[in-house]
Image (cartoon, rainbow, N blue to C red; front, side, top):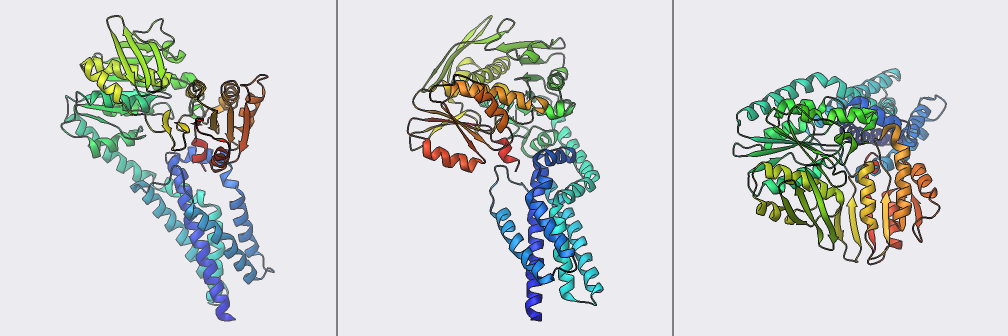
Amino acid sequence: MLYFNIAISLLAAFSAILFLFCDLKRSLMMLQQNSYRNERYFRWLNQSGDSTSFTRIGVMLVALAGMIYFIPATYVLIGVILLVIPLSVGLIRKKYKKPLVFTKRATRIYAVAAIIAIAVIVASYFYMADRWFGSIKAGLYGVTISSLVLAAASFVIIAAANYILLPVERIINRRYYNDAKHRLSSMPDLKIVGITGSYGKTSTKHYLHRILSEHFDTLMTPGSFNTTLGVVRTIREQLQPYNEVFIVEMGAKQKGDIAEICRLVKPQIGIITAVGEQHLETFKTVENVQATKFELIDALPADGLAVVNDDFQFVANRPVDNVECLRYAVNNTENADFVATDITYSATGTTFTIQSKDNSLNLHTRLVGECNVSNLIAAVIVALRLGVPEDKIRFAVERIQQVEHRLNMKRTPGGITIIDDAFNSNPHGSRMAVDVLSSMTTGKRIIITPGMIELGNQQYERNRELGEHIAKKVDVAIIVGQYNRDALIEGIDSIEKPAAGFKKIIVDSFAEAQSRLTEIARPGDIVLYENDLPDTFK
């Protein structure tokens, strides 16, 4: 019986420790997705309810039960094993859309969190063993209960580790920053183009890179490396002495973010693709978004060039008088220097003309959607300014590939057309994507969406408006999750005469949405995946 009790104690302690470290890893993943900023991390915890989830509460209740004297320890230990082993297996096997990347910083945070956890566990072991006259079983019991408590508070441990390491990270980041700055100063002839905007900046970056690469040796910041540290990393790891143009995507979550990147790279050309209602949780107002995006233009030298999109009110109404400014537009063309005309969509893509006061350029692209035409105009303006011949521009635009998850179209073997706009999370882009879906007429038009996030106090209203637009334009709406369900449904139901045969389907997850899609989709149907970001933050 003694050996049985020790075996149960060992298994329970091992199970609890395994669960603790699995949950620490998950908490670190969410901290990483919140840019290692504790204030953003705790805001996400409060909004998502993760800190008070059923799992955390259940684990804490079991831990508390283990502290009650009259409950037999064997029952508690068996309960721990039955509870945490399935939870650990679930965390190990779960696939995430944006999984944890063990960068050097993430590894340091995890190591410090592990040291904190191990210190508490070891102290619990000796405390309980000493209290019960050196009993190994009592010590293991202390390990089990303390591990459960730590697991229930894993987000606190991760945040504490992150805070402890802040001075170290500042020293490391400053060294990396200075190294990147030195590398740039050694390349005085390097042309640097900055791109920012509430949306469209990543696509514009890719399009510009493809066009300029026909004429120059061009480097761009990869993926979503649009923070200061992301740019620093790109410079240190990828910038070569023979590069002629460096395209820098600049993202921002608060005022000063773009100005900080500009102080490092000192761009000569700046593109603003849009100013709209995004990241309002941190910016609060569109005016703050505008001021932050225009930090790029304000940082340009006197002989620089600003390229800005007049289709957005808070771009068009912002004067630029510190540098030459070329404005472009698809719709609000009154004061634009470059406009898109004769836009025609077909099965092969889009044909359009970029018209300026002095020239017109006829182009064809495989891309679809007004937003992509707009992004191409900005890229073409910069290419022309840098001296890329028109024939090379035409050649490059014809061969530009769609950027993954941004109105990316493909056909399945079963004859269903997929429009992947999963990275979109803004009112203008979402509405435009629905319009693209609406223009398709080969079969049922199906949208799968959880709505838009990070819109602050505008989130409910903007998702309600999206629901209205969906009801007018598509045949089937599959609403995913709880984030924006009420707003989307209210918008959909407010339309007295929706699209003929319109149907809405409510599901809890993207997995369930896929299952329902399999049931209803037929060859010729078109499916739009519009924003999956809320599903990432799980």
